[in-house]
Image 1 (cartoon, rainbow, N blue to C red):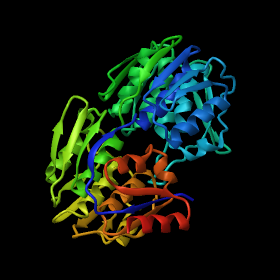
Image 2 (image 1 turned 60 degrees about the vertical axis):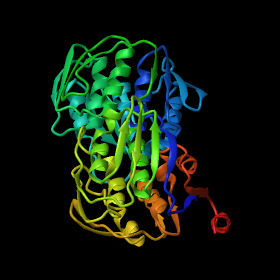
Image 3 (image 1 turned 30 degrees about the vertical axis):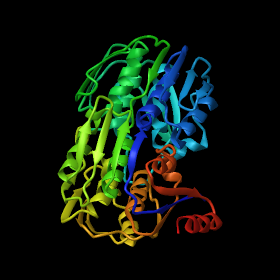
Image 4 (image 1 turned 90 degrees about the vertical axis):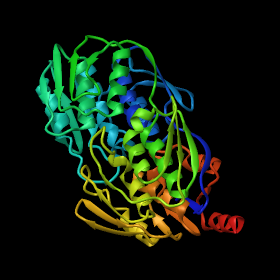
Length: 430
């Protein structure tokens, strides 16, 4: 099993290139199957979740060609089997995007119940509610979600709660339904807008993405397109907090500053300096961060996917901070691991009270999920001594070459797979 080993205490300095948004890419790849023509997708992140989805698409007959590490073409004309049986699909949350895409085009889909990180209950009832409103029947059998319809028709759908996945899934299916669909209380996240833009580039008629009301006029067919995925705001935010916690000075290239406003606002409250450019952001951190309070909210609020990263940073800030998690009930599973490194965090329900400490000390910790794993890497970068992060499989689901990018910024971090390699690293760094 591979691990990251880190010697902390080095400020990050330099430039880092942010990759394409994983959460946008997963939905866009699924949507690429909705046309019989060839679609070219650029700025694709090379991470485990993406590769698992590409494999599953090939299993149902899609022709996928990897032109380079970050560019693929997809041709869905040969998709014959709408039953997604790939074992990897049980491990990733975004498997459900194939439901909306296949139901929209073929009026039938059978997809494993989604997996992903154990960060709390993530029901798909809002997805199924939308499909039923458009005329589909849905059921769960033997661990699979089955949706089918003779015809899909437009509907007025009010989501009971803001759901990114349900918004995207309904939007995909509605793109090829008969008539007009309105989604109210829709999610406004940047990747919702990106998927809508992608579908529109294929000939869909979607208006209002990025607001809480999305209007879709169904079309009978979609066509080929070339599309570049937006930068990953969560990867960018992770590097911003890594810079803050190490007292560094880093320029993040290939970002959309507008998408980072919630993160930027909190870093400014914590004492960092931020310079924004057209497609770049510079973070300059003080020697000592200041405490602040944060509550996770749907976009444009502070993202739940950034909660562990800010909590790690606040654990080294001066004063007491309060972090309230309003999206997922299991988001604080990393706190016990962080406590091994000297953090002082008390969790009561969905609230963490964080008392800043002078320093972390290196320890062996386990990544409990994708974002918490990245946060523990950040903690290791700031800690005194050696930190080993186990179960980095989770981290690699959503971060491409995290160790390599951090090394270019001066961090002492390596991926290892044995005790011998761990000892070799210890000897090398002294």
